[in-house]
Picture 1 (cartoon, helix red, strand yellow):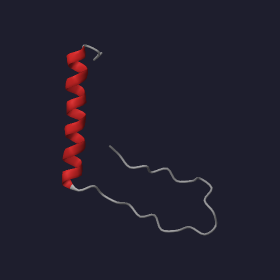
Picture 2: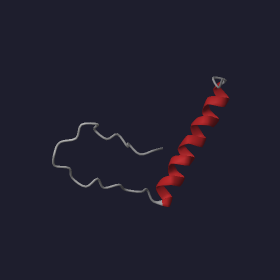
Picture 3: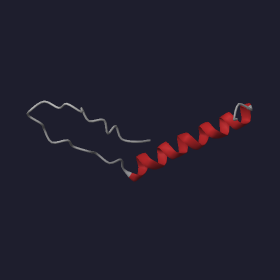
Picture 4: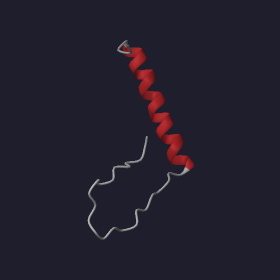
Length: 49
């Protein structure tokens, strides 16, 4: 989860406004649930170091 915050160190002369978008609470909870399920799966497979 994150935001791509890369900005060109040598931007063109004309710059346009950068629009950021935030996820909804439902999207956040869905991503957390996916992450939690993947951790459980990894632990069950014995591949967690």
